[in-house]
Image (tube, rainbow, N blue to C red; front, side, top):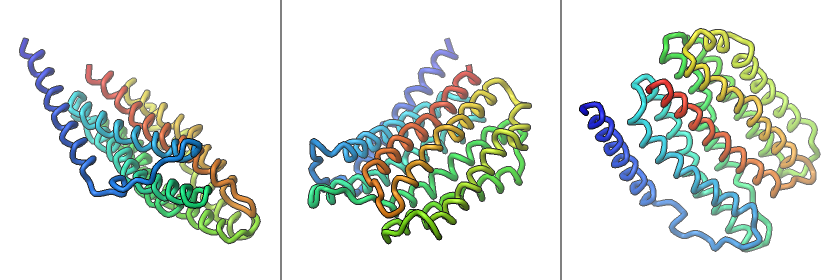
Length: 273
């Protein structure tokens, strides 16, 4: 009976926390208060709105469920909520940049700067999740954290400089290609570490739940993140396809960031039962 009461109290407390946070974030002064009307034929804009709503819902869910998992998983759940929470905040601005330009000219402007600011925060946090779930069971190292975190920063900085040049109307060569190669090299290093390197070796010594979370996360990074290089090619060069780039990026962010957190939550629940 005591266990049932504790479980119910924990869920009630988690729901109260999640509700408070949801009210708080909705009241934040963002551009959403002066939103441009969304055109019915603006499918890219619609994808921005769907991603925005889903990121907020995921954030509240992760924060509520944080109360219902074991202590060693709480930090990972917090980081999962931070990833979707930061993404939600930036998407309220990105969607407005797109919708306002589409309403004025019929052509949406790609919010490159906002998007990379978001990624500069959320992508390293996702990479850090590999370290956190392994650190929780005592098999992570400082070198593991440093190498994965550093590689993710290099990947993003290179991607930003490459995409920032696409507005010059030059073909996909020269510096654009160099920056792309640098970013891909960092991405390939991350793939090696989580699929063949020391990070994988450490993960294989952990519990079944931890291994499930690790394998699901590396699957997302290995397969889901391949969407981003495709978007990079579509959005650069002498004839960039801005619609396709932003649609792909929005879908990738929605699926990858939400799925990342959901895999951690599922493993945490299983491990805490």
